[in-house]
Image (cartoon, rainbow, N blue to C red; front, side, top):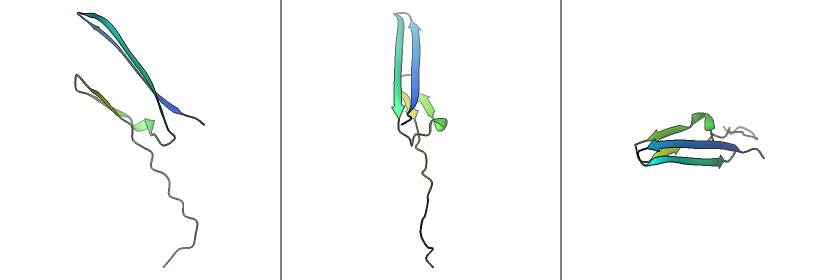
Length: 64
């Protein structure tokens, strides 16, 4: 089974020193990583990963 990963890396340098933040998050088969959005308000990082829409397949006779 193939899994998709999103890797976050942040290096911070400020008056109190340096910091490091790193996360690797795995997603299921239905994650659409080509449409990832991220929003940062100065305090909170919000990452939106939409799901892929499954293709609709119909096996049967048409009803009229």
